[in-house]
Image 1 (cartoon, helix red, strand yellow):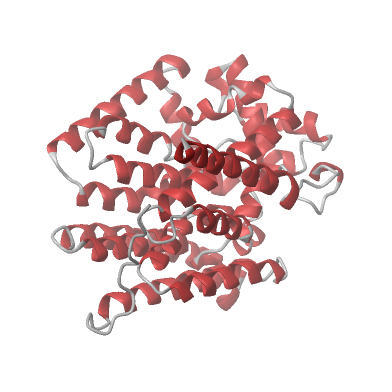
Image 2 (tube, one colour):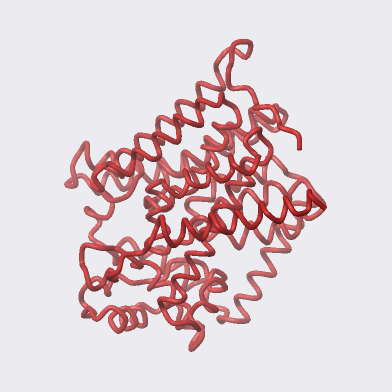
Length: 409
């Protein structure tokens, strides 16, 4: 009975920590972003909320730019030839399952509910990442969670309403379930959480190759077919063509790419800073080839490490995710929540001091000027890749990056 009460107490404490972090530590500003041009509060969530409204009224129009310009202007009060002209929904049609229910609520109520969902998802991800290490006890998980939401990456995602925390949560859930009898649910979760394919393509390929077996392949094919047919039934057969046209043409019709790319945190940001925006054309093409090279490298690494130890597979998986972020296309700061998985790998295969050093680095980034954060984060990702490479090549007898022992109880 006492153990049951302790378990209930742990869950109650988790709920309190999540709510405090969502509504106190990260309290939204009093003024909405569209009343203050220097504040990006809710900038993306308005688009997602509009997508849900459009779906509820006319599902076949979810990729209509005219509808988003109209909705954005009505909500913000801005003219349609302002930022509203860039409003567009760039996610797969099945992702509307997230926003159609929220769109039935007033905008601010939906946003606050989304903050709670984001906070709970972050806490769950941290728990899943730490549960097999000696950091899995309640206090350490809460501490790690607070560090996670203190990072500029998650603060940005929470503030503008990005759903990127669902990407690593879906990948880790699939990774856990793929080795159980729940393979089909795992495949469904994997597909439904893949709302940013350019970031998750390489990690997913890596996991599928590592875990490749007939049951997994059949389950993945069945899940993909079911989701494809459901989307066709709900949105119309041509919805997939609309989606692909939308994401392919997005770079040509959205944003001022000089400023937008500098605000991101990937290799293009560094190349633009080094060689100047006048070389954007060649930098854009080079970054595409770098991304394709990172995908090819992840495929090769997956086949090459299928018979290696779990440690080697985990570390290369962390490298694959890190490379997907730094070489990824459209890698915004908020998309770097995927890096929670590599950071957890560092904790698992390192001394406890690595945990504290990482925490100090994450927290200190909050004190950097906003203009320096993208370049700093891009350099940090490259440093992470070098760190993981060092763990793979270091002499195993003196390697202090051994798996942390589990704590019983």
